[in-house]
Image (cartoon, rainbow, N blue to C red; front, top):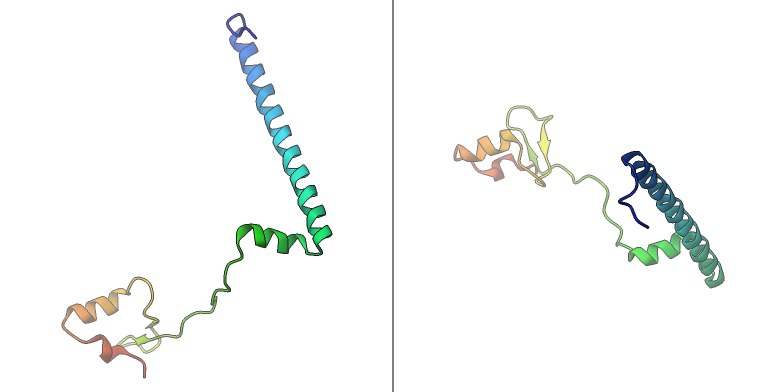
Length: 107
């Protein structure tokens, strides 16, 4: 195809047509893949979710619960920190002043 003879408008339309066809084929390929995986999972006697989990490499169950607080604010007992992640300002100020983190531990 000789593109040099096309106008800018014709090139823009061609680009739109190519993008549209590309997306149509991508959707079609995904639909075919899903149908094939679904059929294979059915033949193997497993659910699609289980099959997809195997493809991903099933992850170990994570402890999604919050960690219990480990430290309590020295002046406001309602403010706590579990010791994970970035230390809150009050904790950093406390330890930078020469005080011990153990003093703030919840026992």
